[in-house]
Amino acid sequence: MRAGWMIALVPMAAAACDKQPTTPRTPIAVRSEAQDRLHKLNDMDRAIGLKRAIYDAGEVCKRVVQSGYVTEHQNLSMWTASCDDGKSWAVFVGPDGSAQVRPCQDMAQLKLPACVIAPAGKPKT
Image 1 (cartoon, rainbow, N blue to C red):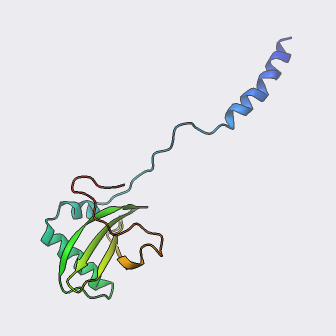
Image 2 (image 1 turned 120 degrees about the vertical axis):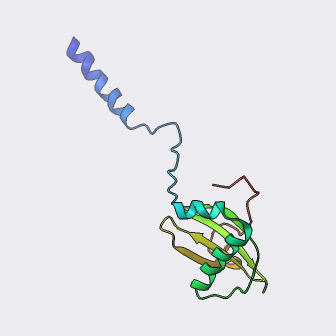
Image 3 (image 1 turned 45 degrees about the horizontal axis):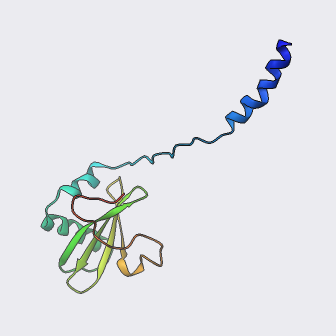
């Protein structure tokens, strides 16, 4: 009789193993010291850093008139820089300190976040 009862529990135990966890998984954020340092820069130093990334990408920006943090996108910190020539750039900074630069006008087509600066003290994740 005991063996029959134990055999009846095996399908129930197997069914319980197939259930997915009910709590959502929290994504793991990997951020480097280089990414964190950008958050600590004053406006002028941040503008210089973003301008350098734009130039390193082969683009031109004589003067950054506005810049700021946008959001985290995958493992990249997204920043935006608006230049005095009217062009705005999205700068994606990776955990390895690398930067990828894209024109803000291309963000919707590329299905990337819009170049909207997050309110101060409230970074979007």
